[in-house]
Image (cartoon, rainbow, N blue to C red; front, side, top):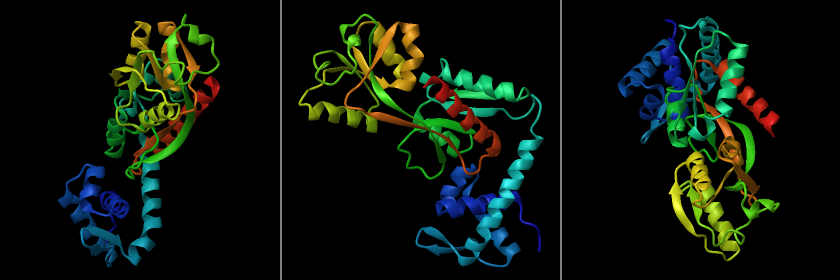
Length: 297
């Protein structure tokens, strides 16, 4: 029997995970015809069918269920070899995706910590939206990314990082900064800066106002914590944002953050593709993030 190739095994794993050659081709950044050819070639080498077609989906056969653990171990071994061979500045950069609001201090700290551990590591940092990070990690354009739950996309694996509360960001001399908590009633008549169009966070903030029978006075819609904090610094209103990202701007813009009540938490995770070429380095990234967040807590 001819030896299965890495391309054939990764195609098998992708189709097994996603149920179709179309979805698998997107995850692997290959053509659908190439994925189909890889599956056909692998089945010929193994001597049995791996998938049963049911309407538009491909269901794993009993043989596929048996072959799956072996395929996963083969890919893990291949990834370990690739990881061990990548040394020197000419190696492919380790790419990290994160929202821009983490670019001021947190991500540079992570990059610095990784370089202290691995002096020969080249790092590329990309700042974009959560959906862009999710897509780029799933398609292999990024090794890892930082995102927020909920994540319903099965193309990525999510590992918990931290859970942080929402805070109200105000100018440092605002009378409300003397309060222990700030709720909808206290800021009902203030100009408010709204974030996260269509997001779970936005819906929960709106529910908090509704439950206290208060109509929020939203006058600005903004796409990021950093721009929202800058509007607050200009005296244009107050913003309700997550504490992790707000921390990046408080000292820089001379602002204060007071916990919002009722509590509205944000759950951050780091994500990677099941087909990540360097899972050991990705795991190291996650551990460093957790450690730095624990230090800042």
